[in-house]
Image (tube, rainbow, N blue to C red):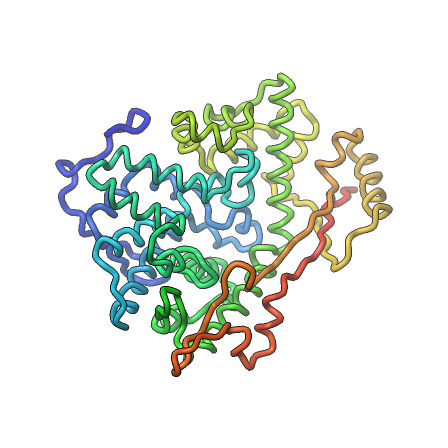
Length: 425
């Protein structure tokens, strides 16, 4: 098997695949299956070591340097526990289904590009990381033909086309192993204790009713705490205004660089980065040209920050200023408000920045902008979290809860941010 000139390690090179990983959150995690070990060893998956889980969050919480690799392994560990609990409660999950659902959760984030969500739609055009994960899993079938059935089964679960819906819900739902791990892990690495949830108890309360994932009724308080923790983590970590500032600055750096390249300017960048910066790669491109996925697999956080460091000295004023400010953590000020900022207020900030940096109208929007932030801890639109009562009935957690916060958490909270450089004297 070959991947961009790298020979993959086969059974003759690595016989002992019963490995354990020492995880700072859960302790020892066993790799449960030889095929899963081979997937972890694959360059597609190893790339996740080079993509931070939380984008620019380390600018606020210095410990938030954990990676998508950490998270994927942790989510797989929780999935193994969930499968054991559901089996113990009398629901059949075959060995093939167990392997498939473990593969599905292990690979659920394999399609993330550099800096995870921050640049999701700026590297490629209108292609989600879930869609790219799907393409990666398809490609892995070529490298593991003997496990093509396992990967196809994992794909069916991943795409909610498998006949056991609850397996999909363990991978992607309001209460999936993805969310349980990232809340626990992000809380650990940021030090924000409000994100700690009772992961073990929630998994112990999992059950299946009419092919739907449910929670035993006595787990209601653990679910309440989970939903509150998610809301708090969004405002305190994921949408923290300094994180928002760093991520929007990075987005605008990439957009400026892309414009310059399209205008014929020469910019420093890795071959993979320049490939995507000079093209609008869309869904059909991935589906018709396998080389594009191979090139995407070469991208990680290092491509981006390596380029940004060099761009500090680029003759383009906008690219240079933004790159210097991000590298040196001279971040834009962010104001948060419940109502949209008035056009007059935005214009005032633009005029101040125009004077300071001698910018024209086209350049100004890279420095002063207003965006909408949305925090939705519990969405009842697609799916609900249902409690299984002792009489066999199910009820939405927001209706069963005596905590008034839960019904409030079902409503999205929207706030507006205004970003602009701090004036230097």
